[in-house]
Image (cartoon, rainbow over all chains, first blue to last red; front, side, top):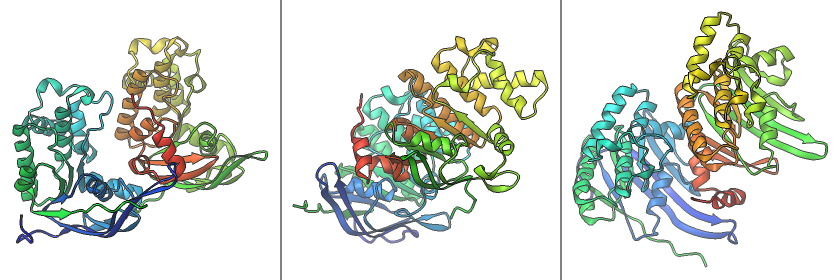
Length: 240
Length: 259
C-alpha cells in the first residue's frame, strides 16, 4: 500500500475543494460539519480506500460522489463516456445517466423492492442498459452462483433474506455491469471468510480490468488485499 | 449534455381559488421517459397543480407547454377544445385516485379498455378484444373477467383496470393522482411492481402525485416537494429523501414510520 503506484489509467473522479455541513432545521438549525475543502482524484485501475474513524464522514463523502448527498462547496467531476459531469450541479437526468452507465454503487444495505425476485434485482441494471432480459438473467445467475446464493432463493424477493444474503445480492447487483467507476460502502461487513474472499477477488478483478474503485472497508485484511492507496479522512470538530 | 426538448414545460403556473392560493410559481421541465413525483401533505396544492397541468382545471396564470407530435411545443390552454380533447385521448393518460372516477362501472372490463382504443380509431371488434385481453393479462386481471363490469371488482382490481384503460392507447405522458391510495399494503406492493415494470418497459413519462414517500422513492426519478401551494425543494429523488435541504422536507422525511 504505497503511493504512488506505477501505471494507472486516466483520471476518472476529480473532486476539488468539497465541503459538507448538515443543517438540521428542526433541531434549532444545528450545524454538523462533516468535511471541509477536500481534494480527491481517483484514476482508472486504482482502488482508493477511505480511512478514518467512525463518524469521520467516509460514507458521506462516498454518497456525495454518487450525487446522493449535496455538498456546500466545491466540484466533483466524473468522467462519463467522452465527457465530464460535475455531480454537484448536473441536471437530474445527467446524474442518472452517469449512474446507469458509468458509476456503480454498492450501499451498506440492500433496499429491497417489494415482490421483485433476487434474480431480477440483480439483472435490473443490465436490463436498464438495454441488454436482452434472457442474457441479463444468465449473467445474474452466474454472479449469484459465484457469491454462493442458493438457487432456491433466486425466485424470491430478498426482503426476507439474512443480512449476509442481502448484502451478497447487493454486491451482485453492483458487479453485473462492468462500470468504469465503482463505489463500495463496506460490502464485506457481514460476510463470512469464504464469501469475503470471493468479494475481494471480484474487486481485484475489477481493478485489473481498469475500473476506478473507491471503497470503505473496516477489515484491515481486506484493505491490504485490494487497496492501492489509503485516503485519510479526519473528523471535523463539532460547531459549538 | 442532454439535447432533446422537454415533453412538458410548466412555466410560472398558478391557480387561485378566490383569495386563496391553490398553487403558485411552479416551473419545471419534464423529459421523455422521466418520472416526476410530487409530494407534500394534504392541502399543499399538489392535486390542484396536477389538475392544472393535465388540462382539467384552467390555471389563473402561467403556461403548460406540451411537445405535440404534429405541431411541436404548444400551450395546451391556447389549443381549441377539440385539439385538447384529442391530446387527452391519444398522448395522455390520467389515472385517478379513485378508480370509480376513471372507469365506467356499468360496462364490461373489456369495454372499458376497448373504448379508449375505439376513441383513437380502432374499429375491428376481434382486434380490440385481443388487445383488451392482452392488457388484462399485463395488469394481472384474470381474462375470464373480461365481460364482467368493474363494479364487481375489488378496489385493487379496479385500479389495475384503470391503468390498463389508460395505457392501452400507448400514451406518452401519464398523470397519476395517488394511484396507490386507499389500497391494502400487499395490493399496493403489487400495483407498484406493475407500474415500475410498465414505466421501464414502455419508456413512459409520468407525473405522479403521492403523499407516500416510499412510493415516490420506488417510482420517481425526480421529486418536487410542495408546501402551501409552492415548490419548496426539488431534485433527484434519493438526494431529496436522503439529504433534504428544506426544513419542511426534513420534517416530512423524519416523520416516516418504519414498520
